[in-house]
Length: 251
Image (cartoon, rainbow, N blue to C red; front, side):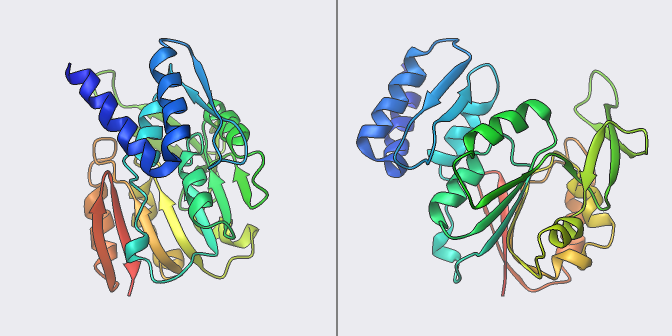
């Protein structure tokens, strides 16, 4: 009964974003798909079919973005973002949400995982205002090697090395590539690498950000929150928490 109750709540939440007809179709597809690997979502809110992999965490993220509306903060926003950089785009649900709210914005998505990037590219293929970079985000343009510290811990070790198997790009590097003087909205969800961003001269790019949305991962990189709040204390931000994210708006 509890599971049924959760499903009903999700349906009601989906209706807020998708309206009744689309929400019902999405809900039925999810419930009846069982262990089917992929679900294809068609909605008037999207410019192309959107994939959800049931075998991954895609649906949980889909619920966070489109049912719980964890990126809905228009009430606090006193400007319309023209440039949005999404660091850690996963399969693109956050990008799709931003594109639905800010139709004229240029959106740049950055995602390192090859499998996620393939779905990300599919989910945003009909969005001419979206550009994608397959790379991790780091404090410099380099290559990275990532490994778990041990099988019992969630913590990871990230090492910059020419022999690394992951391309990494810095936020100033992204700004230079796309000729951005400022970033109106910067979302950071990069699984602990944010610690290194805030330990290595973040003022270079942070001073040019109007709105920052970030998820901190102290479980992966202990000390991340300390590094983040130490730097953020140097600025005058309006800050609040919604869902898993911290929202910071430049005053």
